[in-house]
Length: 402
Image 1 (tube, rainbow, N blue to C red):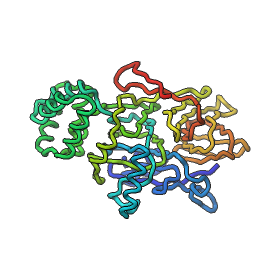
Image 2 (image 1 turned 30 degrees about the vertical axis):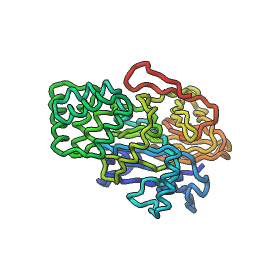
Image 3 (image 1 turned 90 degrees about the vertical axis):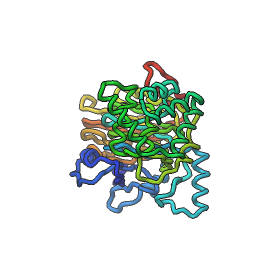
Image 4 (image 1 turned 45 degrees about the horizontal axis):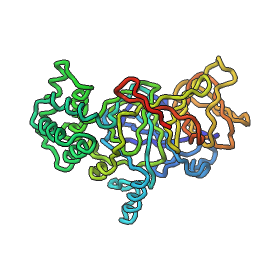
């Protein structure tokens, strides 16, 4: 087992206090958006040892990446590509000679990027398109020329294809700042009057505080608002349009940094690429129900090959410790308290909140003792139980993942 030293990313949307507090550090006043744990070449972890080494030199390339994410403001309106799009896009940008770390580069690796967010605090996000009828209900409540024209357009061409065409036109034709401002003001008046439709108007007001002239403010009207409470998880498959709003979470994903953005960001945009990546099968099914492992562990397995997440509690009531789900390669992060990892050989590794470690196949079964909580990211064993996706709006709207 190896204690890890991880790379932080300082994007402008990051919280100045959440991650430092989580790590037990003093904030320096600047935003800290993410901590990366894994072997991705853009921010590789290092093992803590007398002679430090990159984790990739010990473990090889891991198929999954684990992050701590903390947002004080909305992230970009974005989509992640599927495997075929990622391979083709990466090869094309390589052939064009675009450096892999260039700001304007879209495909930084040839891999798809399904991901799952596990809330550490109350976590708000936008995910997937609302049904046509719901979007029309949202638009009909806004008495501005832009909202009326969008409603007419969607009436004429309803369904997924019509929604995508509407979004594409907003992105390509652009919207005047005064038209966006009129929609924002109308939404503010509706919220102040105590009227909202599935939090669509409140979302517009919140997003416009940071991006008042961005067309993403208008597109947010078409997206589902989802709030995760601590301990809840949501799965974002490739092709799912989304935009995290605020809060702190663990993100576990395929080891990729491919993101196509179309608004709500200072980073380069690729609206044409985003529209091409949108998945017709996308829906409101996003929450992941956990499967129990023993008495102390919830396993969030969204039925992808690369990753699952197991969150385990331990206390002195179990002197023998809590057994973590079996896996070959594992990244373990302590999310609360003080614990010790114990491998099959009896080796011990202490972890406090925010500390992380790598364990390989040679470590065998892992137990965690102490009083606290750990999250284990790992590649699930083929055929292991997967959870269910739950409709984010309709109670009881459940679909098995497998």
